[in-house]
Length: 376
Ligand SMILES: NC(=O)c1ccc[n+]([C@@H]2O[C@H](COP(=O)([O-])OP(=O)(O)OC[C@H]3O[C@@H](n4cnc5c(N)ncnc54)[C@H](O)[C@@H]3O)[C@@H](O)[C@H]2O)c1
Ligand SMILES: [Zn+2]
Image (cartoon, rainbow, N blue to C red; front, top):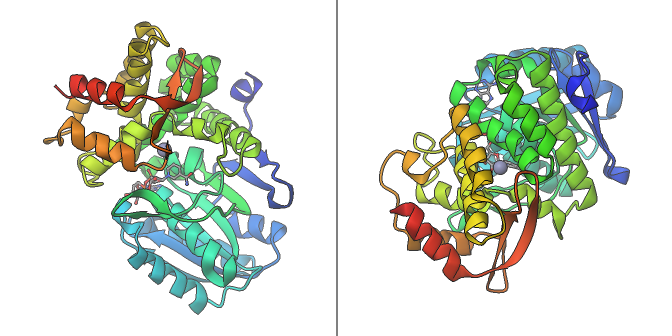
């Protein structure tokens, strides 16, 4: 676990994707240095910055000043915060701003914000002029460890989440760990669910490290940087092995089939449930369902729940405030999820902590009776 124990201010994770290769820089002070980092790596000198109304007052000025200093002209658009911004309506606003800023093929769209802004801006960057360059400046923990890496971009449809979008890799990711200090405790925890996910997929040592060190990760400093770097490395490894999700990349969806159904069931209302919280409950359900299918020991499900609960994440459907629709409605949402292939349910199941696998033949009848039990 060298990646975990060594300490230095800025960590770089390289994503070796041939002509689409890029670096992820992780550490303090990166927004102030953004202009210099971008100018030294990319040719263009024009940028459209897309951000949201929570992040703009905190960091937009510093980013624009740093771009100015590096000779990069920028225009900014501030969108509403929240999942509902991943819509056609806001995509149009974002695309118009990119064109208005006269961003050409070698210039860039810069996403300054969480996963919502990253997904929407990446989609705009992927389609305006058939693709312009894209820089991610992720500001939430979730976006630093997950959504800013890997090139999946998109918006939601009334049929479900992330159903409309393109693959468009960023050219650079600048994860400034200082900005996490202004993130709410709840959003930090939600991002932490995705950190834990990497351990649960195939890194049991990392999960054990998190069980022992999560307080230091939450406190900030080098443990936090190392956890983010380890997560980015884990994601990069999966993305490089399967960029367009023909197989193993689906492992990153551990907990997400259940999680997305819960997000749909709460109408993407962040006062009730945010993405990472849905993933937390979803991961516990995936472990419990695996135990029910006699694939894993129930002790593993208990261990996973214990840790997620300890950090303050919801782990049960009953932890979600308000009424949930019946199990059958959750099942419909699962069937709408894009990981359903030719009538059979594809789930990420597990043989134990750090031993997840893609199961593409899961009987719907088992899922529905499991959900009915859990819902009761
Ligand atoms: N593309 C992918 O591969 C991928 C992977 C995982 C998740 N996602 C997507 O990411 C989205 C969730 O991302 P998220 O959790 O970052 O949500 P988000 O973008 O809504 O950010 C969460 C909240 O925190 C605020 N915020 C962000 N940074 C802040 C900061 N530094 N200080 C104060 N407030 C800050 C935001 O304004 C927002 O209110 C979902 O839409 C999900 O589908 C995409
Ligand atoms: Zn996720």
